[in-house]
Image (cartoon, rainbow, N blue to C red; front, side):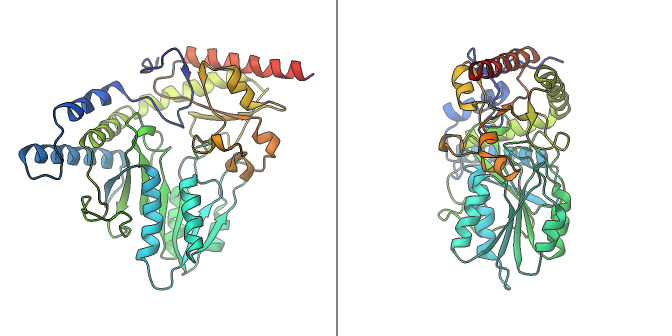
Amino acid sequence: MAADREPGSGGVIYLDYQATTPVAPEVAEEMRPWFEDKFANPHSPSPAGREAAAAIEVARAQVERAFSLSAGSVAFTGSATEALNWALKGTMEKVGNGRSRVITVSTEHAAVLDSCEWLAGQGVDLTVLPVGADGLLDLADLERELDERVAIVAVMLVNNEIGVIQPIAEVARLTHSCGALMLCDAVQGLGRVQVPEGPDLVAVSAHKVHGPKAIGALWMRQGSEPAPLIHGGGQERGLRSGTLSPALCVGFGSAAKLATERAMRDHKHVEKLWAAALAVLGDRWTINGDGNQRYYGNLNIRREGLDAARLIADLRDIAFSLGSACASGSGRPSHVLRAIGLSDREARSSIRIGFGRYTTENELVDALTRIDAAAHAQEKFAA
């Protein structure tokens, strides 16, 4: 089945779905009244304020249903970065009884790794576990590190750079065996793969699921709520202060509802695109990360001797990336690619192709054919 036409593509073939996704037309339409006529503060007792508050609660329920997790609730945040900071720092502030350790993984998003490093600077004992060449955590490594001093273990569901899927249910089971909490960064997973039962805290973002930017959420299992990170009016159940945007909340709810309704259709479309991509690329490219235990809308590949930055500059009407949008501008090789054992040269010869709901097969095949030809031209020039 062909994909819907990508909204607002403007002549550029957009293959950077891990950085952000196009806002779904249905989502934009539902948000519009809340930007224009329905501008009341949802925390006001006025009739217009109560209407806005009711719309936010509808959106909250839509996001919660997209998780399909039991015995928990969602608090809206300004981003997934805020949600992850809150989960980690708020948990460490709240726990007692000598639990002073945090465990995470070397391929986590910077929002987790930098928050953990900050906690380490405050005296927390930090353990960062390695991954194998496939990008996957060895559960035996985690099991060896668990003890009664661990407060929280943070492991990502779908890696934002290489797309591999970590065994989250097993991580949660092991984590709970020592009485600790488990945090899952599901930013790249929500709406794409099932979020497994087990985590106590789950962070997500609207703009990775065809919703608006500047809104995320933290799902919290009952009894696992972290201490507040932001203080003020206590608008989100006394846990997170700040006036909520009805437009953004409605947009997130609409996007989550649409993702739930389209889950099977989107999944089949992405699998079809993955097969088409591999047919074009052949054996001239190497996939970074496990080829099977992964989300198929993330294709991180490398080619010997490729200058990936030059490739992007040569193909300005195709949007793809070198890796995380949060770190691509630093000039440093990807910490994820280095963690799976790639040299700096191999990391700089890697590109990330991201596709999804609004990518057509023709667009993908055309773009990858041109990317492959441009890479081959580099080889001929170098020779």
